[in-house]
Amino acid sequence: MTLVGFSGAALAGALALGVVVAPEVPASRPRVLLLDAARLAAAKEAIARHEPAVAAAWQALAADADKALRASRFSVVDKGVTPPSGDKHDYTSQAPYFWPDPSKPGGLPYIRRDGERNPEINRITDHRALDGFAGSVETLALASYLSGDQRYARKAGALLRAWFLDDATRMNPNLEYAQFVPGVNTGRGIGLIETRGLTRVVDAIGLLETSPAWRAEDSVSIRRWFERFVAWMQESRNGRDEAAARNNHGTYYDLQLASYALFLGRDALARDVLENAREKRIRVQIEPDGRQPLELARTNAWSYSVGNLDGLTLLATLGDRVGVDLWHYTTGDGRSIRAALLNLAPYAFGERAAWPHAQIGAWSPQSLFPVLRRAAPHFPDDAELRRVLVRVPPRSDTDRRTLTGGQENW
Image (cartoon, rainbow, N blue to C red; front, side, top):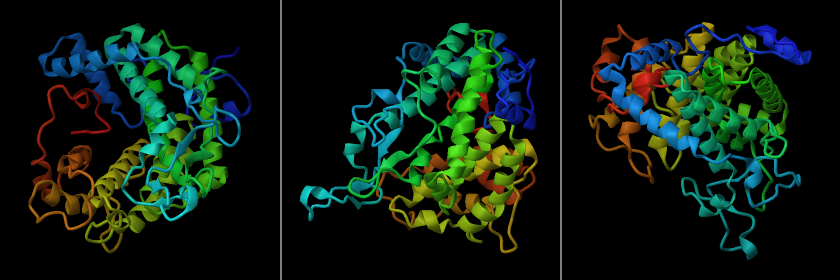
C-alpha cells in the first residue's frame, strides 16, 4: 500500500487512478470546513491549561462523548423494511408530510399536509440512525481532538467504518429511496436534505486525522465513498431534481456538494457551486426587503425562513475557504444575506408585531440567534447590523460552540 499526502485537485486525481491516499496530519490545526480551526486549536490549548472560561463547555462535551462511547453501531441495514432494490444497504425513508387519503381505498395515493409530520415515518429507522451517527461521531471527534483521549477517536473510527465501509453494515452511496410517497413514487430528490448531517461528519474526519488512533486507510476508503456519492448527486435523477430546487432544498444541496468537494480536494467544483450560489440561491430566494417568499409560503414559515438562512450562512462559511464572498454579495436591487438577517431579526427580538405568516409549529425566536452569531464577525463596520447583533443573548456556559466556532462564530 502506498501512502501519499494530498492537497487540492491532487486528491481527486489520485482517487480516480486508484492510488491509496493518506492525509497529511496538520501540526496544530485540524482540517475542518464548517468549524473554525483556529478556535478549536485555541480551545484545545485552553483546556490543557484548565482555563475556567472553557471548563463548563468542556465538561458538558466530555459527558456527551462518554455517552457516545456506549453507543451501539448505527446502520441502515437495521431497518425493518426492505427498499424496492431488495438491498437493505440502500438508505430509505418516507416523506414526512404525506398522509393516507381518507377518500381512497387503502389511503393511496397519499396526500400532502405541509408541516404535519406523519408518525408512520418512524417505522423506518434510517433517518434516525443517520442523525444519531452524525451526532455521535461529531461529539467523539471533538472530544478526541480537544483532549487527546484516544478512546474517543477509536470509537468514532468504529462508527465510521460501520456506516461507510464494513460489508455487513455500510450504506450504499445513494439516496434513491429517500422520502418516498406511498402510492406515488419510490423516492424523491427532496430526500437529499436528510444527509445534510454528513457535512458535520466530514469535519469530524478532519478532526480525527490529527489522532494517532485514526487509521489512514479509513480516510482513503471513506473519501472513495464520498466520490461515489458526489457522482450520484450530480448524475442521478433525484440528485438533479434537488440541484434544481429553488428553495431551502437547493441551498442544502449546494451546502452538501461544496462541503464534500472540499473534503475531497476538489476545490474547483466547490468554488463553482459557491460562485453560482450568488445568482442561483441569494438572488432567487431573497427579496430586496429581505423576505424569503419560497419559505414564507410554508405552513411553518418562520422555521423555514430561519432554516434556509442558516444554510446560506453555512454556504458563506464554505465560501471563506475558497475566496468566494457570499456574506457581502448584494444584487443591484439589494437582495443579500444581510437583508435577510435584518428582515428576521426584529421578529426574534419582539420589535415588530407578531409574526405575520403561518407557523403551525412552536414559535422559537431564539432559533435565529446562532445564525446571527455566525454572521457577526463578517460585518464589523455595519452599524445597522451591529445594533441588531449586540442584542443577541450570550450562550450558556455549557454550550460546546464556545469551543468549536465556525458553525456559530460569535
